[in-house]
Length: 170
Image 1 (spheres, rainbow, N blue to C red):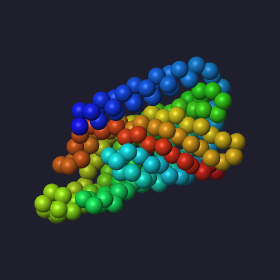
Image 2: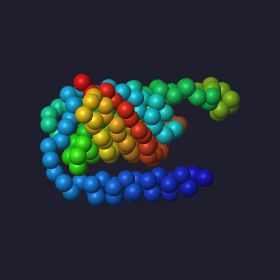
Image 3: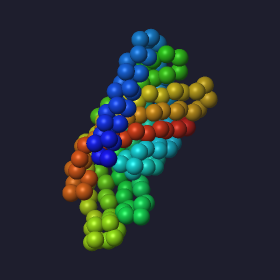
Image 4: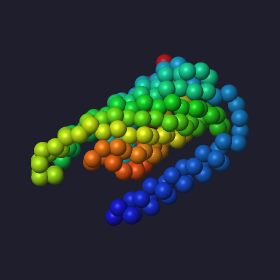
């Protein structure tokens, strides 16, 4: 099952990168809102729900911050994320973006999961690549991939997190 998940993740990453390359042929001035706040829903290893905030640094780059959490039968976890992103126009109201990031988090295990109560603080180096659509009203929708390498006893491998976001722009 793990090998199948790995193949699926790499397949999705390949399709996503090809799509971005095909749409990135037309240049125009992109739109980056000064601020955007909303919710990102990601795959399970990305902790599910995340409150997300973006802050423009100029006409083609921004910072993104997130606070993710997961309340599961086997564990409770929370983590803070930060990214630096370069934003590139595609066509119409589409942009694509990419950039490096990092996160730090805390996970607390239920004793039934590992047969002991345990917890840990972990860190991860991550990146992001995504595509977004901004409407003429203050809504920004995006789809992204976040490859990451975790550093901790439990959270210690390579993962790819797929997520979708909706943000209010102001």
